[in-house]
Amino acid sequence: MRLSLRAILIGGLLLTLAVPALAQTEEAASDAATNTYSDRFVTFAYPSAWLVDPNSAPDDNTTAIANSENALQAESIDDFNPGDVQILVVKAAKPFFEGRLRVPLDNSLRPGSALGEIFPPEVQVTTYGFDDGRLAASVTLPDDENEAETVIWLVDLDENERGAFVVIGKTEDVAAAEADILAMAESFVSAELETVVIADGEAQLTETYVNSLGNRRLNYPEGWLIAENQRGVIIFGSSAEAIDTNNIGTLPRGEVLGLLYPAVALVPEIPVVGPETEVTSVVTFFANTGGEAGYVQAGPIETMAFNGLEAASSLAINEVQNHERLVIAVNVGDDIITILAFTPIGTMDDLEIVLDAMAASVEVGEFEVPAPPQAADAETTATEEAE
Image 1 (cartoon, one colour):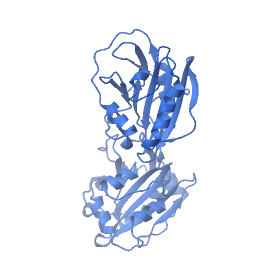
Image 2: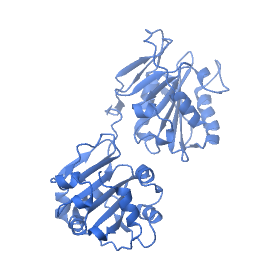
Image 3: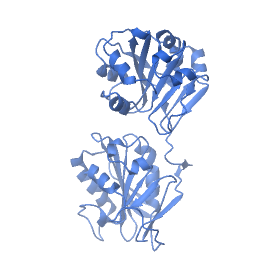
Image 4: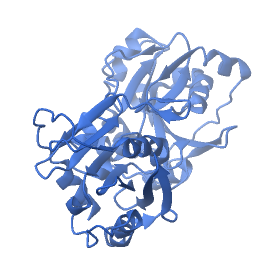
């Protein structure tokens, strides 16, 4: 988006306004659904004549769309032609509001209440309820000098996730596009995650990794990154951004960062090491020590069997640090391997099937040792966050 949004927002905060109700017609909703933009974060429908900014990166948090080429390229409202409307589609509202606009956004509040917390009382917040039960809200910030306005939408995507639209144009042009904008907002939903391929209910693990000792082999999804540090701990991530993160709480939606301890003795500070160690003891260790770091258990410890091998798992949520942690322990015969995986809150359900499959794929034996892997620092990062 090429307009100075923060400047527009700051100026608009000082103005009193009234927001007209938007009326959606069946015709407008139908017209607005002719083209669909989608990526791994969100999907939404927009009118077939509208354009998507070709310079938007696939992993960017924002995408600009407009109803004309001129509107898409405009650097200020002065560059708009009659009829031009530009919209910045924000796929994750919280980092946008807090990072770019420097204002806090509470995802636990309803969209109307969240906007009410940001703007002063004289700014009217209009709320909406969609047919699927999701909520949305908008505020309008007029620019009287240019006879223009900025409309900010906050839209439920799914639990504790919000998207946003920032609409800019001359007042009469934004009004003319109201029905299309409402239809776009209602079509704005979370997309299916494409971090992994799952076919017929099973994760597709097409890549193979052997540790530096040649005594552990496991499978993992195509496109994921995997390495090993000097202690022999295996680090894996669903992207370079995930595996290089310095703060687990900032992992993008759908990404996962994980550690695989090939032997129980490699688990830091674990008191239960020896032939009598059980998988439930390992998982219980993380459950008991996690409370001090802000983890709250999401249900009891579960036991299962992977390829006839005893296994156990436990899921915990850290609301302060904004992530979930899954612990999986598997008795592989000569020892216990442990997977510690982290995802943003609300996405572990989508990835647990993959992590279970990775744990189940671990084999013990004598395998050809790969070239020495590049040492990774993710273990330090992840364990520091966990502790």
